[in-house]
Image (cartoon, rainbow, N blue to C red):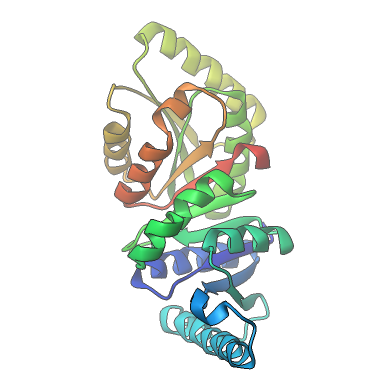
Length: 281
């Protein structure tokens, strides 16, 4: 992991995400790009006038200063680190700006808070985190507000026994290795016990043959209430991070992780959520 992109709206909701991004950047010795996206009301931007250009320049100067102050307030380290850069962008869609910057800067991971504080913008443009879950070309981590103690000791991966899961777990192992973390692979199912146990054994063998990481354990949970029991599992195992693979196929996983349930998971989870896009594996 060489480059991490973190986005903020300066709210308390984004402070935990900043700390997660900074921890990861330090662990991987990665470049950390800290970005704020603003938009000038359309009434001001309807014509490119000298007044508008002055307002635009003022916004850039103001927000660059605010970014540095936000970082300094919440990260007790100097901001003159060469691996940290501050970017301000004018765009009426935060998602579009982040996707553009992810490509421009060859970003390996995008880090955002679970939600912002601007309810009007959220209503008009949709939740940035949810949009990125579907569109991000790279790994995404969504961090809920209030993660006071941020650790990467125990990482939960929700699986549906697919080939793509093997690639995702292998990628996850690279992150876990930096923290000497335990990975617990869980499958939540309504299937018949004997059949699912056989599938799990096959999957275990495949993972162990293809993923060079020793600290991996496997669990089965039989349930018809997927979200409720995944949340219970996170609490029961004292998980630090949840990991999912964003799929496009019509699979069991996709059935239970369609957009409404993903939104529910992002809103209810008290731990950071890492999403690997299947196209980026």
